[in-house]
Length: 114
Ligand SMILES: [Zn+2]
Image (cartoon, rainbow, N blue to C red; front, side):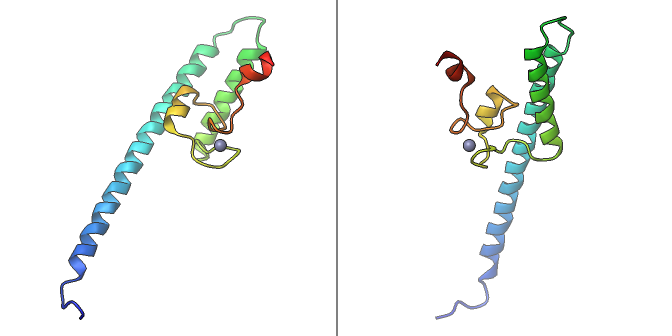
């Protein structure tokens, strides 16, 4: 009934492969994070040139972006504050400073036009 001797190699191979897949996912995740960090810095650079009086809107955007960079540094970035799931990369690409996923976020236009 029991298989003799050779049960271990298959399991070991599967483990090695899954570890490698995990590392590949992790590498890709890091690359995506770097891309998002670059995006945030670009947006920050585009906002900071002093545009005189009309500060409030740009100031808030700068604060949002700086908060996002801060979350990255503390490894809290990319998690929805409402449902605590990971925010999909495509959604972060659209708005790298976002705090909530599409499912939880309320589009700002909607409350303005209501
Ligand atoms: Zn959510």
